[in-house]
Length: 77
Length: 378
Image (tube, rainbow over all chains, first blue to last red; front, side, top):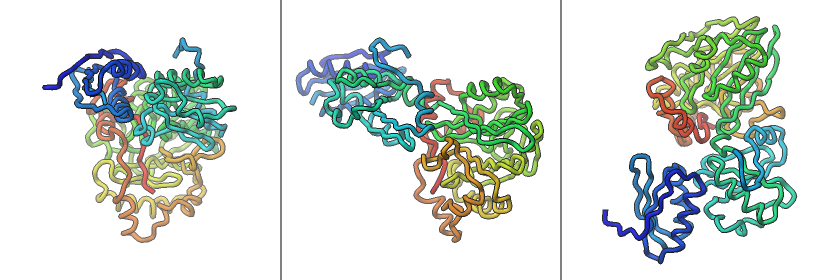
């Protein structure tokens, strides 16, 4: 994978709403165009992050599942 | 769930009772809009709005004008975490009567509310367990200390409670068919109580556990009550109805109050549509009009009676249910095989679980059952 990651956020073990609360905090510190890699274990995080990114104008570049950990790469809009 | 925020909580049981009692209820559903559109809390006097929690991270200003001033506000989410967060935000905005629904839609999906439908002519009663979040209905027939279950749901504790409090010895546990929308608790409850688990054999060809076959015309004595099996295929090839003491007709997923069963959940709509037609337009017609129909599902709040139960006389359904009044066979075929609603969530896995082929963990079983039942066509 060739995505340039600017920051990694660990949300493993956290339940809603924390993964998105933390993601928002981190995204707020990034510049437009920078990429945040998010790790979460909460299943609900997946559809919620997708919807949140859409409403916030961010781009969900890619997602993957690795051993029960959901990984997301989000580009700040 | 304890909360450190000071936000009040409400259990799904308390919320269900308010809705069954037709109280005015205002709900904010804080899940994402796709999940909300797919499935939500409904009731006669329920107003529900969708406001995803992730759009309220910095406060609730955007929804303030939609919040009632002098009413309790109930916030629900998927599991109960985000609703606390949102309820807290609303409380901070100056609203005092804000409640988070404990356990969220997951708990809502699992709640069973027992409602006494009526008495039996030789003594005893029949109870309908309303799974209000999913529209599943199951039944306990209690006749002078002996009992039978029909279409038991996965969460067996509410049945066990009633059986215990009414001092009932369960002898028979029937499933009207192999369910595709929810996981049967029949085998589990049979194991715990020593009752016999019974299934229609034509639905059980692939199961890998022991069961007693139900055949057309079989009669079962439960205390002083007689339950008679009536083979009524169409939703599945084995679907069997039960007549209780010439008073009640338990139709499974063949006939509902405002709709009829769909024949496609085992992938055989074309094969089974003829069976469905024969059951609804011939077999059931030979039964007495004053039988009270008790289905295994309901789809909408318009089907709920004043007392919270779901039932109607067979004769009335022949007058009012559209699915029983399609005279043209081709039109009937079209209605039940074309433009069907989406199939229930994880219906294949649920069928395989009910056959004993797969044994998902409890948490996975919960996930599989999330969403509406979708067993009917209108």
